[in-house]
Image 1 (cartoon, rainbow over the protein chains, first blue to last red):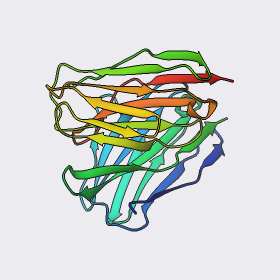
Image 2: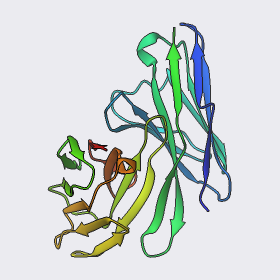
Image 3: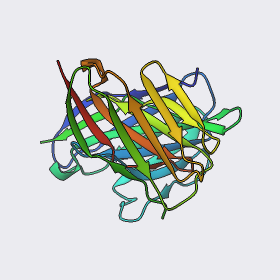
Length: 118
Length: 108
């Protein structure tokens, strides 16, 4: 249980175009989802927290107009990289919070999206 | 900001050797999670430790949560090439606070 599907797994786009990445919870309702960015050989860096039905909360230094997050339903959050540039090339990973006994909630991760902007 | 320090950052060992990875913080966490990530994939949860002093075993992997719930360790016995990957600790919080990770390479 608690599976998150992220799509696409890889995308190549031209500089200046926009790219949308989807994150779906398949077998549970995800009120809260998270978007991370990971540079090569580094850990996950939180970009924003996505709450269903409300505006996302962005981490310091993350441009909210560039990385648009929409969480319009309990099973889908999307991250749109607008006017992408080569420096936006990275591995983007979504995560969703789900209820778990004892710890109250757990986290499950998507398989990531490798974005390459050329 | 709660920070998690992981050490070592890189580790290259021979098959059959033992190793320990450490995760330390100045903050107290209600629980702590360990993840393993392979290239091009998302992190996969290995274990969650909740109680101070708790020890959990997952085959050849032993996880320990410090008594004060500020630190944790992961010990791998008789490492195998299949253990190669990025090991991440994450402090229970909303959102998760990740350590920088330990990149393990096990050479056959």
